Image (cartoon, rainbow, N blue to C red; front, side, top):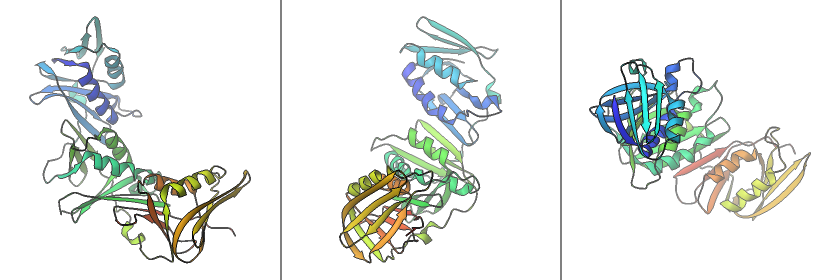
Length: 367
């Protein structure tokens, strides 16, 4: 294999495919990147058996071939080379020769035949969405994914496509995050993608408002086609929680409140509470205001925020982190908070749309 390419193009490919390199494995080949020149061009591949990434790199190919090379070593060498054209050659002993300007390195690689390639599924019936929109939906929901290994289906995010919309849902047993966006197709799919995949794909997705991504799904995998790169991930097996059943528009208390004002009030009150000890922040909802208090061994806090209220007065307590995470994921100036009782979940939703919903379970209030 012989090729030349510009350093910045190669670095971009390395940055993308390295997200699929395993740092903890008993299989040394999974610590490698695969470099391959073929009729389609020059590509880099990474695969940790959960997520696989293939990225095209613009290059001048002089001889086809392939090689697996330690990702960390290769990456560090390329990063420290001058910002000039790089020459890469692989000989018949799997020796990788790297030249750039006055620098030359020889690194022992492994046969590309030993590399476990990503399981590229057939590209039939794809679902198209703007990359910036998908990136935003993941960012505003991923924090609610469970880390409890005894509940594996909750360690991923649900992607559901139906009725011309794409829904992304995450829940961990204490809170639920839901976002929706138009997608155009009326097909129905429902799959669970590991949180690692969603985190990594969000780092790759462009913020360019015109860039698109196409999703392809089979029984075991999902493929994200970004054009110059593709990401393939296994799906989590099992049935996702029926989240629609826990969202209800019934309420006994409803407040309309400035999102920033209540967020800052809860953040300040939470400064003297301990998340580790599950010390709550208490909300007392009265006629035209919400009183936010915290009372711990460290001290006390008292905040008041003006609201518009419908229904009954209410006292309720929460782990402040869960409310803060949800409010930070919302850009609206005003939000609705819906309550039914001191022991029932609080739902946070928009004033006039249904593009998002957040639900947070309360802590038992010791009066």
